[in-house]
Amino acid sequence: MWWQSAGASLVLIALAEIGDKSQLVCMALAARHGRARPVLLGATVAFAILNTAAVLIGATLTIWLPQVWVLGAMAALFAFFGVHSLRQSEDEEDEIKADLTGHGLFATTFFMILLAEMGDKTQIAVAGLVGIYPATAVWIGATVALIFTSAVGVLAGKTLLRRLPMVWLHRSAGVLFLSMSALAIWRMVAII
Image 1 (cartoon, helix red, strand yellow):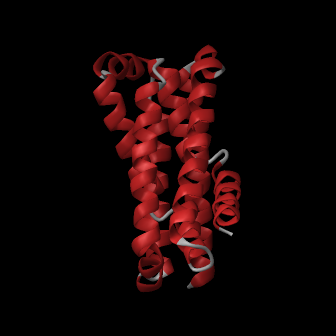
Image 2 (cartoon, rainbow, N blue to C red):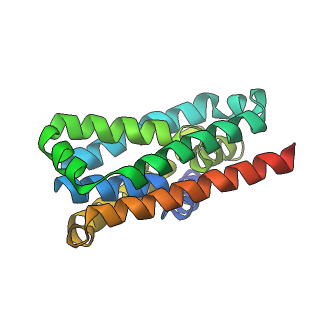
């Protein structure tokens, strides 16, 4: 039963995370800086913390906070990230690339994923799965799934996306973030 619980969590969270913003973060950082290890380690630590929070208090927070507040905050953050991504130029890319060392890249990845994924669908799914399956099995399955999807993102970023101009990746990410902002606003209006 324990392995089935971990496996169910792994499959559900991996499918939910493929193509999500954290995977795009891993792709973009690996492509921009050409270093896989700090990006993957930063993502791993961030997801371990996020899954721990989801298992311990995630379900409680989703009950206490009105969904309209969560959606409003998501819409504002996604809109900010979208506009910021659309405004980045290749000159800014070079400055950022020169500034980040291994520790800086680890910290950047860690904080970007920690902030972007807090209260995300996968974190809420992990909190919900704890009501059905043993908490340890859910944590292990979800964490392995998120490390796997991050590794796929890093690999894609180091290989495929290094051939694309970063400005196009930022524009695509900007449009995606603005679309997610619009979706959050639409869902918020539907609730009100």
